[in-house]
Amino acid sequence: MNIFKRLFRIGEAEANSVVDNMEDPIKLTEQGIRDLKNDLTKSLEALAQVKASSIMSRNDEKKHLNQATIFEEKAIAILKNKDLDDAAKDNLAQQALIKKGELEKMAQNANEEHERTSKAVVEIETNIAKLKSNISKWESELRTLKSRVKVSKAQSSLNKQMAGMDSNGTVEMLKRMQQKVEEEEAKAEAYGDIANNSTSVEDEIDKAADLTSSKAESELEALKKKIANNS
Image 1 (tube, helix red, strand yellow):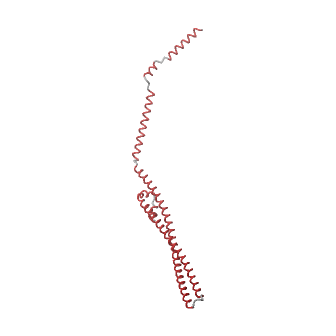
Image 2 (cartoon, rainbow, N blue to C red):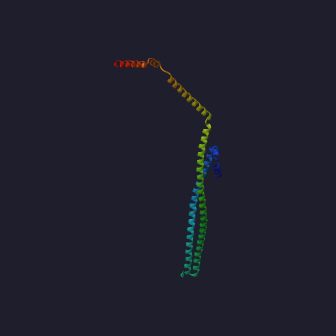
Image 3 (spheres, rainbow, N blue to C red):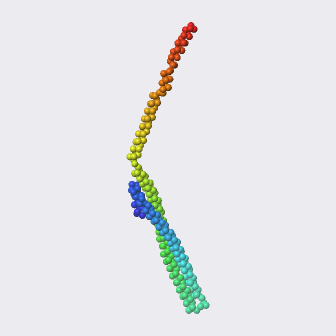
């Protein structure tokens, strides 16, 4: 896990330089998680088996103790049997007690097996809890690592684009465009001046042939004469 902790401490400036090498830690983490999940599956199977063994040994202990009690009761019944002579009673009772002892020993062995498997169950359950915790932790770190890779790749791509831009060429192009626009504006203004200051030949002729003023003078004289004649 130390390798991932070191990677998570890498600053943004360093992230761009190592982005191409980040895929290997991701693959290692994914493989580590798969291994942990395989271990978890095996541990769960082992837990089920050990628990089953613990339950069986506990049941065996109870069964052997019950049978031992039965043989003790049989020994007592034999000793009380009046149809048998003392030698036969003693022999049969002794055989029953031997069987009782064997069953008690078997019960003891079953008890020891039960205690052993019970401890194993606790240990396996503890390991399972650790595995689940580690899996959850690694999956969280993997999500963080993948997120950092995406951000780093985006930053790296942007930096490459910025680095590849010809800033001087762009500025020069903008200057040429501005100059061209200014030239077109000046040309348009010049054409406007020409249009305002120039007249056609017909305009000059009409101006020269304008009789409006002389006609008004003639009408004025005629009106004066008309007034004089009427007075």
